[in-house]
Length: 419
View 1: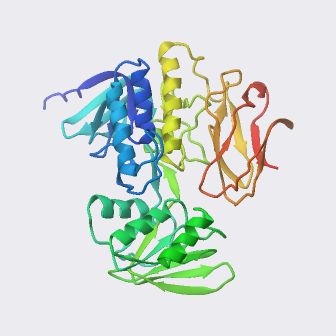
View 2 (view 1 turned 90 degrees about the horizontal axis):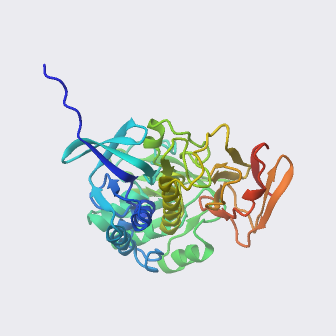
View 3 (view 1 turned 180 degrees about the vertical axis):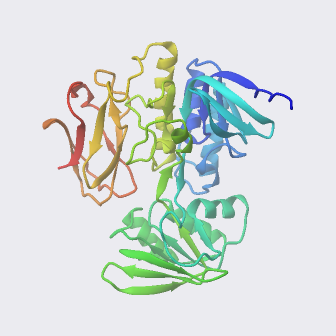
């Protein structure tokens, strides 16, 4: 038998994995900043990430408020115009070296090596099985992403009566998609005591579209054999009910698509389930950065794009040798931890003495009315910050990084709590 032929190897200066808002913003910043050859790969056939099949408006930069497809097209245009190379239909299979990925595409398998790698792999919705919803396994069960693609990209039929599980910002565009598909929305259901998309949205859906919001209600069972016929509910006060429908859409509950980070041996954070990073968005592997939904499930395309641009500026400093030496996670970095009801914080570690870099994002498990966040280290208060809006589960809360210079390198972990 003949010897196995080595895979073709291509070397670039920067490799960006993921052509969503974070990856495209990073690629544009890197290329415009003189990083050299910037290559963006994405496994989907069309770049743009989730916004490309979200027909509703409200997407921010680049270029101001616009619909999802308009936002995605503009982000792609900016990246390509800045000088980045974009390749779609390319799937990363795993790591062939510290900064080398084995990939495959219609042109065949190959290896891509780079001086710096940015993981912008995005987030994914947890399906019904991951949410541990019991019952049968009939047709008619979707996530929000699946439904939006079916309606907006492919024009496929959905069903006649649908229930939307979740009352998050993404849940309301699902109502628009159902209306476009000619499907009646029976109700929105959330286990939380309030909707997370705001009271005005819930009232508009109820008054203008006749879609009630059932709060404090848990889905206990899916029913039906070949096709969904209904779902069982249990309210917090013990009442039970059945909603008759042939379609159910599970919305929200996003987790980072971290398989590439995990297979590369990067340290992962238990709270976000994404790779651990410091304030410069550096991971535990030298030369590898992370941003956007692949780092933590973010709430908007603008947040992901902003974080991608921050990661790009950190990468430029790394490539030009003006950044501090790559830190050792257990020796140089101070961990940042949150206390309940806060769920997670990102970035997760701090390099004391380094520039502030990015601010922090937090997530909460409970509704917090105008919370005050307190940052401490070894019992010493580093920072106190009052928020004038209600913190909502599954939506991020921002925390300033102004307290970073006060972190002691020899001290214990930094704790963030609600006062």
